[in-house]
Image (cartoon, rainbow, N blue to C red; front, top):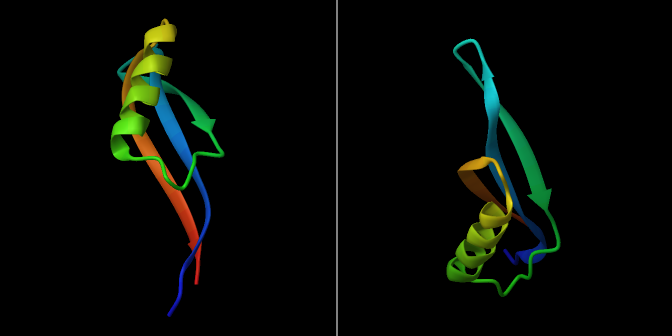
Length: 68
């Protein structure tokens, strides 16, 4: 079976505050991530965006979509 790269994105989750004990998150998704991007490249991007934000970065997802 052959798989073909379709798209990829990076999703950043920021702490936006609290509602009582519940954590409120702000999510920002960046699309059009190059198929050739390494995890190190994504780490540099993530740290750069986090450095520009006033909010605390909680976690990052890398989403890769392929067709089969």
